[in-house]
Length: 297
Image 1 (tube, one colour):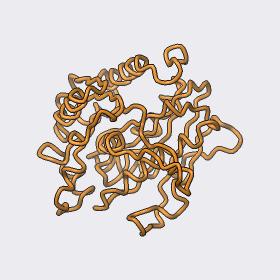
Image 2 (cartoon, rainbow, N blue to C red):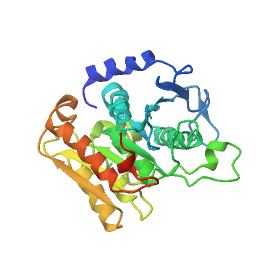
Image 3 (cartoon, rainbow, N blue to C red):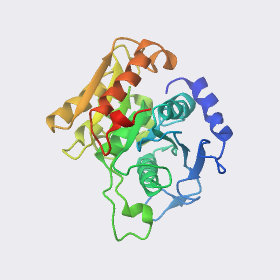
């Protein structure tokens, strides 16, 4: 999130992703809004946020929308997006990499993209061999904040809506948050807060986007992992969310990683391996939809 050089490098990667033709093994990139992305109730932009879908060779019915980090100022979309999707594919999970719009002080813009991605994944569920009850969200750093916002501020869907996407619930069935920004309060990451809310947030806006304050009994089961030596995004972010989940009796697991800092030693090493292994083990016990343990490839 905080590595400017990395962010610049990985943003360019997105344009090189292959589009699927008739081969489901190739990633397919789809526009979320077809060139008319909402900014407000009646205002739109020509920005083109997308999802890139990595379909597993042996799908087990699960899909995860992946929100890369980048401080809400860019996207670390290769290591925290495409690389994660390829890893999920090895376990039969469809990876959906979200290229969301940068907020630039438009606080609702990333959330609208992420919720749309969840709805689109469910809408295409049959075509992509996805069980609609097994669609989760995963996020890293500022992308973890976005994923936690999806988990706490989702739309239930309106069966009378004109747009078929809007008829579908955007509630994720589970969330996996890795070294996430959670709060916009005292322990936030300053750059993420400025990029999301602007230099002078509106009254109550910081509280509205502090996910630990928005947890309810409807918040989905959540796995969190954070290194104890993370300085840019201190682990109290994950701790606050975990405690809020426990208070509402939402199934949750918090993995305290012994080292790795922010980004977990450049996405490698024992702490990186630990969250991957243990998040899959945690997911096995959720018993969402079909039996994931027996379906695992």
